[in-house]
Image (cartoon, rainbow, N blue to C red):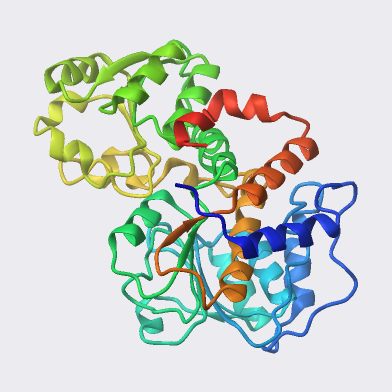
Length: 398
């Protein structure tokens, strides 16, 4: 059942009133809100000049400003693109502490610019244990057992949202992953980044080569789409009947992973295996015969190590890390922009309804989701239908 966060609907009205629906020339306003820390905004602004409003219109909007000091912990992969997200928070007047996810090492130049600008940066998660924050902007629920935020958390990923759902929560959580706009990042953005990373690391033509994409969720759909678009022969391995049917309807060869003998035969004849399930050590749990995977392109695009102990790090592209993160721009800013904006904007919902939101996971407000997606499509010259043809929103429950 869809839960609508009314505070986010008000934030949506704020965005529309400030021109979000008409992204002709959105820029930062000349007025800068008061920040609680001595931050060199000019230094940060000069760093994010590489991402103008034509590329990142949403992160160039002003957030609803807090009426009192609110301490934010931002924990997502730290890249050049992340700095603009952080800059938006600081400009709005939030007291921001930054760290990076443990899954992907932070970019050193991004760490350096934050420290030079005077932004509080934590090198490790454990040094933040027990410290007080009002809101945690989390990824993969990495701070679930480390920090108890006073107002709540906003989760970026599906695996993280699931961890929060399985936990006994003492605060509310808003899941940005439960939205159509997240498909812009995880389906289109990750699919595009995976293909660029594969070309960079492999440096061989994939035309007519056979790839098995393991998992056909948002990430798997994007990876399969871009591989096929590049001329590869793509098979989809899944255990969920609805995803097998969806893949078959799209013209992919399908492999039911519940039949391990058939799965093994298909692996043996494939040129490459790409994991996109988000399940840790999946292939090591399913198979014990390493020779099945000999002389093949092995790649992971999930947040977890889906290959496991059966495989040495060096046997998998980019040492088992998501392939797109071998690139300076792992995911292009145009795909991150609306998702980062929603991640930041959700703070307003937690603040406005701090005494009424239940201590459970809430999905992102449908109205905001729709308005951001429509504005993004208009700005980037595409349509809702074109995105839906790749992402399949109905299969996501939207």
